Length: 275
Image (cartoon, rainbow, N blue to C red; front, side, top):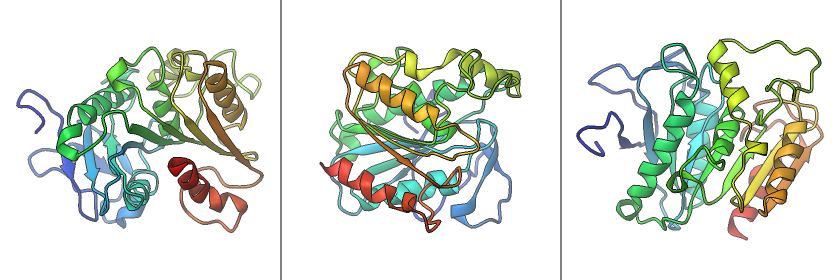
């Protein structure tokens, strides 16, 4: 445990995503699924799982999986991403966060991401990290959550030093900012309330961190307008952003290969990370 009064812990992981043995923290939709295909259907206590690199470069990333804030695609967009980053020399920390709900309120995911970043940074010496080299990598709803950390809602010690954001609904779910005409509110009400309150492209801090952005132009789930909004916002606030929009890729492409040009985005991101 990080401290005796906290319900949080940073746990080392070797080849999987274990559940706690002392009490139920989260529930898998299919506990028998291969680790890279695991999906979490409910979260009762947030947890961070740590993946250590073989050849550390002194940097780290908090990994935020997607799932529309109603589930977590933690295998494909969490474990696989953490293993990829660890292979590049990064310490990777996969967050299992609570969902916006009547039980926890609309801001639960943001609160959990803020606390995760603060605790990782507070433990930087333990992991041999540069405290100014801790970023975030978020895909889909995890990308929206990642961007929230670069807004005024997050305290300075929780703000990332770099961001990787993929196919995230930055602000097109908010009333008055949708791309789809007459788009109805998203259930549950707390999820819609989160998207109303957190619109990162108009809430970024001045001098936001360097940002890598990747989307598909034909994404049928998350409009590509989100990519342009985020890119424009980072530049307008004095930051630097590299934007990759691929013509064709399914929503949730993550690191999986689909025989399309978007398959190359991890290599582009690796070049950006080491530039």
